[in-house]
Length: 331
Image (cartoon, rainbow, N blue to C red):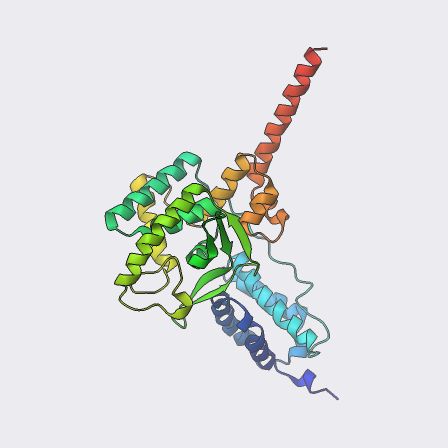
């Protein structure tokens, strides 16, 4: 005789999991999971959760691949199913997680695109020129902050004035700004790995932010709407009194690339890669770079910037070889 748990349909467990687990996620991830869950439900609705096998899930994921979905997207479906069945195991709806033995699909390694120091200078000059032309300095300061700190753009747009310690030249990175296209609203979520970090900033960026705070005070007086209390202290607000949407920043960024003759496929996120690469090339310790970027583990940093570390290793080998040649020639 089957227990009550064994008679649960997949959609019943999915509904429970969505209401309990997905609510903890950032609004963007939540929307993504909810949209993909509709596709999963189309496939597994009506089946008893305890009777769904590893083979059933393999066939589903293989079908997604055959439709032409990218490995990264297929892996997202796998992660959703794995999390859902882990929830089912914890609640004793099933005895084991059928997804646990399915490996992630291999993804082609993305080639990191970065600016060299001259290109970055040209880019930031272009941002400043466009800001002065349009009398809109917020975009320039946001992009300069991203380039000078390696922060994710969502983290930059979530900055509050209370996060900036001008005296000690540090920024507290605690939130990321998200926008739900479904609910048409903004939210301040935690950072990607839910950790708070402190990033030191240069005197140049301190002065830029101090100057922008004066501009911000004038902007607040001219706002058409009063910002919601949650967003009232945000560094980057629009004339409408709303948080700055990253799509508007992206459009502005592309204009600068065109006007400066820089690669037009260079993304705002690549400013983060540029920051890390330039620091490593200057000889900064990878652990420091990891902490600035907010990577969970140093292995993530080392793996992501292998191209830089291999070049530095070659330089180190040449330096050591030159030292030994000098010593041997003196004997």
